[in-house]
Image (tube, rainbow, N blue to C red; front, side, top):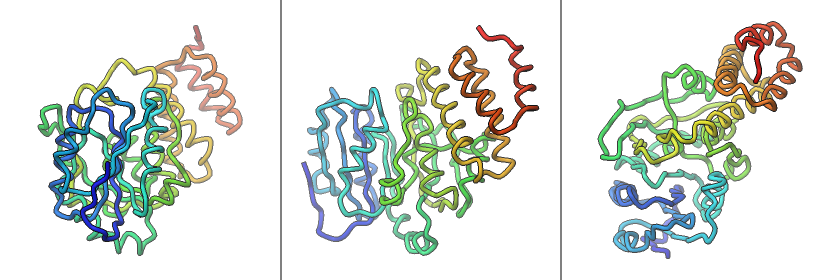
Length: 308
């Protein structure tokens, strides 16, 4: 299914990896309400039991969209793979925003994108970030609006994130298409932290451009990955993998403060699930290779030198 509003060239693709119908109408309505319609939506159905076609018919002539049904469900085993095959639907657009099927865009998100695009591309920035606000299942605000420095290094952003002074979710970012196709999202359990790592890698650990005049609303519904508590072990594994990946691959890029913050968080994640023998082996090899001997001895003391 494809609907075309006009033949004009569009710079922005909004990609929706679809699975849940519950909040999808509100998501689509936020696209129809955009003050600038110069975008195309690509919807990839992850073999959902909830057929969105009748709903999509209501949005014909309201914005440009292309819809595709996949016969195999990937999100249950590899959410990143579902993201990638949805991104492959994108045609000529140069920028990609990956929108959760339960999230909502403020009405001026696209308008603000074009207002700032010349500056963004003039500075060779590869990642754009919007302000964000968390909403619940009833679309009520349950957080303040999270704003950011207009131009911020991704290392400084990660420091703020690790210190708990900001938040992050996939829907609030636009990525340069060529960069995300080259770098791709890394595979972590539940795709937990895969989006945050993409921000760091696509920006090449350099600058992010923030648009604070428009808001992306992230839904904490009680039924999405962030909300659920039956997946804590998988989240812990993904968190450990994320910290280890950055420390192992990008240690030469990290300033001392960020390096220490990541080590602190790696150790905390380890302590939250220290019974995995393989993790002990990886952890020990990493600390000895990087000559963190004193830190390793202190950490062993925290563990009580007890593994069961």
